[in-house]
Image (cartoon, rainbow, N blue to C red; front, top):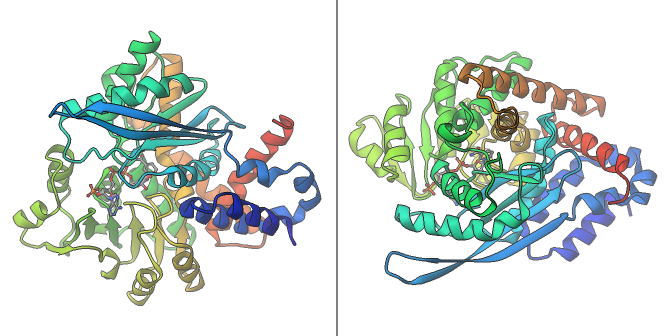
Length: 444
Ligand code: NDP
């Protein structure tokens, strides 16, 4: 049995109940075969794959808080510190009822390679809770965030582990968590990113993941002799990533025609009204039905369906496993030429395989959405030097990083005779740097 197959079997046995984690490990290890096969003896002796698939530590804790009726509620908190070979653990905190250990482990595992791809010194981690921020008052959100930090503070620090936002964790939640960390530890340090601009946040962090996704997509199209300008774009999600992907798509001369949330989706053939979308999602925190109610050109549909629309480029920006094989078939039938993942692992393995077989350019999330964490690392740099850079400075660094990521993974794929396979390229480019660092640091 090959070394990859041996480790895959072990990982499956050890983590049998963690579907998303197994999916991520399978995708990464399978695509690393050319590198592993070329170094099999060394990697086996060093147990490189066993070490990289086992987190440094997994922290789980009780989060008790009091709701507005005086009732005590209890959630479960998580922080998985996966790998710090190239820098302090870095990765977001997801607040969503679906959160469990397997999901946090999948996200933390992916984060190792994503962070490595940015070429910045950050390791991989992820955390969160099964707490649902929807429908909660500001006071309840604060009570939860403070209680969450009452435990998390023991394990994080500006040079140790620097969490950030993710689904359900935006500027408000980061603010409450930062305040509590500062109160408990008595230090003002860059322990979280995604902070408000008045207390150490970076300009362009809010926009970074969506903008970065478009910088990456434009470069990928350009290298395949296509231009993003004039393209019709289907976007899923209506959160932080989706909104700023839509904004940058417009700036590049493309036309985004869809968005979605967990209850339904919008098709707006005249192009999504960005200001209206921001008002509904960022200010009112309301449902997309409100969008359709005031926009005559828009159709609202319950449930899922964004990928049934005719488009040139598809940008899944909501959540994991939201683009299935049947969706991929519809995209191909409708002439879609490129799929770039704004969310983490939104495309199932079968759908990815189908898209690649049909010649659709496919950009995996760990590369295409790395702009968020890259800008978080720029926020860490600004905090360390106690300076704030201008929006233009951060944005232009972000653009450079995304272009660089594309070429790094494009080159890695070509080196292993897999030209155009950006999944393989991203995994290899991310993996090589981490493994070199791990081996240099000995068995630890
Ligand atoms: P937000 O919470 O801001 O938005 C998420 C969007 O996706 C919302 O519109 C939400 O709808 C929808 N959504 C969430 N869960 C589901 C679900 N189970 N089914 C259908 N729709 C769903 O999150 P972000 O925009 O920050 O994150 C989106 C994705 O991008 C995630 O995969 C995240 O890990 C990834 N990502 C985010 C980064 C960032 O900087 N924010 C960086 C890199 C990756 P509703 O509001 O109805 O729940």
